[in-house]
Length: 423
Image (cartoon, rainbow, N blue to C red; front, top):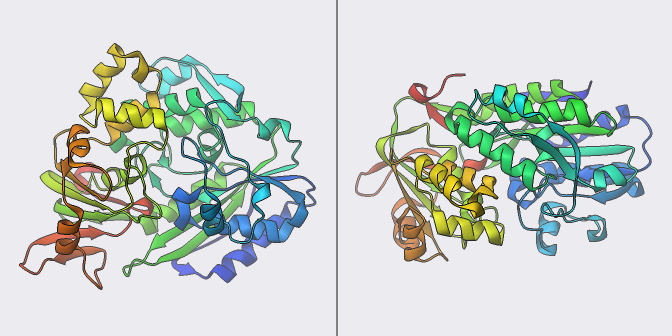
């Protein structure tokens, strides 16, 4: 059931979005014990944090807990909480421990995984969530977040916010691996994908007793780099997600006329601190980059590889060295076999030698970048050459006439050439 929706590809004001959000909350009727599941700081620009602030304003003391959908990410600092959810009492927040603090709602059979993976994989999949969803006695679980193209599931959010954002090791590992083995370029920007099918199966079969309602934003980046709201969709079933996907693709997908020879992506240091997150620069642009092209990633905030210490170690050990290298490592090494989300990430982060990737971090050494499988670039040199006052997303030119395509934030978009994308 859809409780409210508003959409305008030209943009809507925050005041208008708030009015419709409150309309949707009112349609839910009386609720007395509420859990909010908003995104974490890595989704800063998606306005999910703002929805959490508005929900607390509307419900007041009826909001008993806030569980940021960390997935495998590190817990947020007090400073990050203030940035993401200004004015909310820190005592309401609960850190999601994805390795330990989960329960299993049910198990998707291996026959279903075989079907959606086209026979590439055969394993059961546990629908894991943070135990608070089950034991907290809530009469409303409000899942908040942004619908945007995504490398693992096609379009982010909705059931992903629950079963990955508050999920456990087996659920996260196996869902990510399914997406990687099926093929990232067959998934990105698609509403219906194998991973989405698995999560929806779990939600329909194992979560009927949980009072989950989704509030989904769609935002887009304007040519000057600023963010603007385009829509809000609220509901307790798949319909609100479908509507949000349609709008998100309209405002966040760019089909380039010709494959791009050189792409320069800037990673905001407040949002991107690891290659685990920063590699959206690779995922979202790969279908637009020409064979033997070049991707330059300027990453002033990136200081390590993984959000999680164990995954950071695995990335350093095995590197972004292509699908074949990673799949062989999974068969030969137990540590990677036990962390399939890391294996999936390694596959996603490789260009498969089709184009070069040059990382320009401020706090990772040349040796570590090269060991991971990338080329290294001095951040000062590349920033001075490609970033200038007044730069806008799209085609640009250096002082000596070199042309390149600039992207100020890869997290909210998807770029492709028609030769590599069909929907």
